[in-house]
Image 1: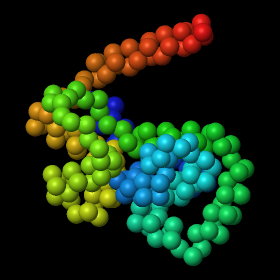
Image 2: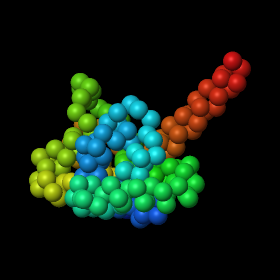
Image 3: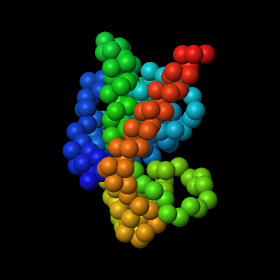
Length: 194
């Protein structure tokens, strides 16, 4: 079984900047995108401290609660106090925890496309949302509540069943990972020479 299937079933979100995160949902990604978060790929700018605080705040509650909380009268005061308190944490450690959370939350099995089409332009979160509503008949609210990793697994399993993609076995995936690591070593050695 691909590691993404195991990871989606065993996901336990971490505590970042003192807040326990919820499983990363389609709604969280959509809200991050609406807030122009660099962590959701909304901008090419590198994320700053406030970007991380906002993303952690959004992901620490169900997406619909976070949407209300961002607009609440008390939100600026909360961010001011929490921002000061968050500075006592080791920023790089919290940043790494949050990036691992995002990576695990967006995990999907490795696939081999059987059919190549045009390059898609819409953000991936909207494609997931439409797929969940169109192909699996979820309501919009149920689709937004769906953990991203689970939505990716549904999408890839559907593609596997329809024959539009092929799930890559763990053995082949390990081979790809080995090749990737060797490529990284080669790049580092070339950079060291220059």
